[in-house]
Length: 386
Image (cartoon, rainbow, N blue to C red):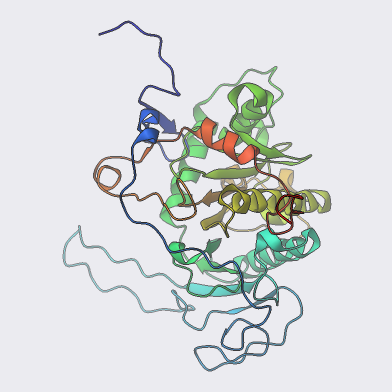
């Protein structure tokens, strides 16, 4: 074998995701392979401002028969077809075998309409309107989190038909559960393990977690920001938040969005200034996604944070709950790979062995950085295009 120096942009290798303790296989040499597989239909970009048949538009009747309020701003309501039901629920029957255990789950599900207009996604909303969405996320997180038996509030958005979104009206959901779901629970477990086993350099300027313990995400994002121009994984940054394609990204243009100036466990602990910066960077990220392939870019977005919110008025340093080791962050997992019509599938090797990607995270970040922060539908056409 020829003795060559390892090049991560050329040679196959594995990368470890410390949040899940799982690997992803990176095969950058495969980006040149031809594609003869499935091609997605064009994404609809022209929607009406109001759709009389949309059950999420103001004043319309929903599928379950209830009428949606004639709302004029961000609006939330209980899902008419909730995945979990309110407590109390029946006890689980005796298990017929130790391998066949049943765990009852109770809770509630909310639908969050981002805006009354049917045609305005997050990428098309004004920053003050995104700020209203963030306020609603905070309200639901606190309200549901204080309900008896609720231990986790999972806020998410599925954007685009290829991500399973059944209604194009811009909206998200919040599922509040009596259990901490598997993925957030795994992340919290690894965050705790890192905090209890890692000895950090006392001279490090990275933010610390509760009680001065090291925080995995604080240290990771501090490193990424400090070597921003060398690593090439940072996509966007403002005074409080950074969006980056993580070292361990699985999806082609996956983004991890998180605060980097201090350890923040949940959205209710954000200051007014941090919420404003949150809205600004959400606008930048979603616009760059749309601009990448000049389409309404599909993704699944999820917020991971502290399982249960603290009572109002309690400062972080007063709360010694171990769950405060959680570091607030958002996952953007988009499926598009080569264009608006070619998507990434997690099949075959990914299902049977481990996740795999072709485009390196650094290459993906570079492509996203090169996208304008002005939405392509708002861009002024050149004289040649007129």
